[in-house]
Length: 395
Image (cartoon, rainbow, N blue to C red; front, side, top):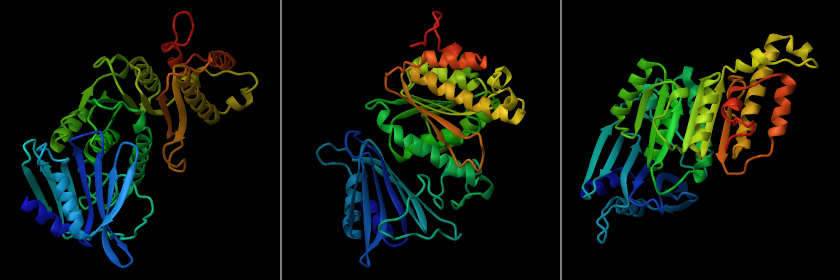
């Protein structure tokens, strides 16, 4: 106990960056606690943020009170002999510490002094501007190994768009958290995971920062990439994260999935992933399509033929048509579907995201879909996959 008290005595001053308590013993109340220094009326205080599944509560404490509060949350309760939280991350300008609380209440503190590199400037403003979920200047191990961050938390210039993209994606996940089941382990699949920037980010956000029980599988065709991602998962101790080599269309490794993610699954691979998600009854689908060639080869329309004559215009129209039809087919299968901008269009014209949340209300839009297919003489893969033999939308 004295080591824990000493830790907070050493860190609760103007050099503190943040404290995060995660992995709660109970998922029914506060699931995460954050603390940071604030300057209010020229007095240094520490703002405590208590996160439940639906709300955030704030309070400002003195250093002494904040130390007692944080120590208490990591110490075993005398009646239940269980600490409220089992993990803590303490980051200051001079050191980083990880606190682990065992089932028996034993507290282990691993402290590492920071390098002498220039430290990020800390804002003590009581009301700071909106920040990224994964903050610049705070090292995240998987981002360092994936080449997005340097050892001191700076973003590599060539990968700054990727950093913004990852954070934007996590914001979309934050929005749909209330739609996911509670009281059990969440099953998440990432089809076409590639180097797995997002797969690692999802795990880090949900498991490490938010304390959610999750099991995540990334699937891709590249054996060397899958092998490297598995090595990183072992290195970080992410025991509920695995990577498998395989084809989206033939994957049958589980019978129930809560969330399906596809990032740039090429051409009809996106359709197979969406069909799999619908078949599993996934509560949430997040898909960033790529390389929509199928409709580009099929599209015909006499009225629009002067426009479709130009290859680049036909390509863009085919891509928009493909994603629009995918969204409508998901609507017909009981999903409330949105098409959102993933990152600024100035960076890439292809980063649109299809976000679908299951609500069980099947849209009566099959006649409209059929009319559109006939007008452009197209037969998209997702339509074929999610239609019954009697030519009705599959549910």
